[in-house]
Image 1 (tube, rainbow, N blue to C red):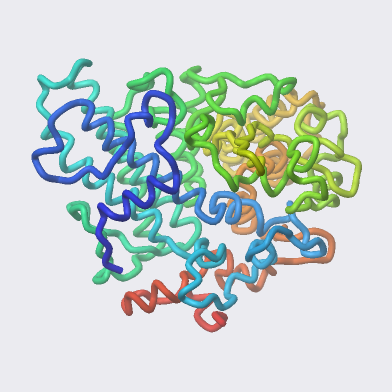
Image 2 (image 1 turned 135 degrees about the vertical axis):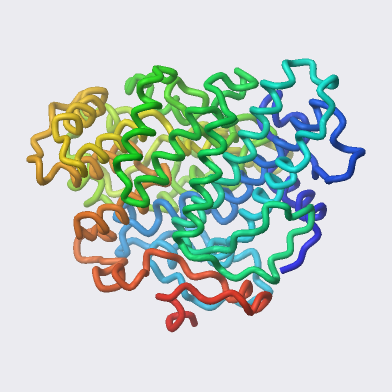
Length: 499
């Protein structure tokens, strides 16, 4: 899988746009390791910007963030086909082994089985870590020591984030050399173990924590650039995924106790998804005209009058049983009243991604979706802390945080007993973080910890207990990757399942 990194960078930036406000408007470009590039603070900023642009490309490619985090869950029913051409219906049903011809690289199934997109960001982070210290201090308009440390912290964060994200999807993936230059060549890399990948993500996140402060280098771009809050949120999620809930508690408490973030009003609930809300911790920037996505989650989940180009039903119909009985059984929930339309109909619509505009030429009106991908926000971390408390038997602490989130939504205190509390927290995460790319990973933790398997609705089961215990919750890698690198072994569950 040898590719010229400069060409890949140009391609990725063409796909995902230039970026966010003043930061990514620097027109990030490939950051070569030669001495002619690393000459100024602006060069460093452009190189750092490229990492975020490449993460955006990875999470948007094939709607990766939502295709992995939401589609294969009880939010969508196997009884209701997912529309809009492509492989999304197979993805939501858990049929991840279908054959895709090697030439059809644009197919959603192939895109969602490929991890190489994330390595573009990893190699860019490696390049930044190796070369940022070479920039002359005299070239900085800001404080050199503060800015260079923050740049380096962002690089370690982005690399940690990419490894962690891949580890949740595939388990074991290659760990590339930290000193890899500006050529992406994984031909000699096997897949590392899932444990080794998580260890790498954790080590990088801890390094990022040493470098990053609370105040970002830019207040305008505060949620789309990593700071200490972003790395603490990442650490809390890494520890929770490892079932290390003592350290998850420590990271989440440090973030919560900082009082750096505050909960947004549920009366204006959908404003969170425009980006840069008071509770936003880390987001993928898409809320300006030059970042807006043509085929974002809103394209598949909205309909008229919120998406005027779709006068029919939602392309991704929500499972009404899960929606109205498992999750939102109280219609007075402010997240229902302000976050959904047509809630009691056969085709309810989530309004989180209705922030869009239209680009119109003489014949066609094209919707441009301008909602940020909200990766981490305060409610997420509060409920993750409640999860850590419930796991460790601190039931009063878990209930206090759970009821705080419920109170924001206008709901009464939980009636869950102590032995029901862990699942109750996961259930509340399903309400609060509905269609935000968390549900699948939350259900994996629930299955691991409590042996409760909720990958379906009614009589449909996308991952049975037996399949889960054999590792079906990890994705296969696309056969094209294996063809290009014989050292790659297929994900164990899928080794006999691939078509």
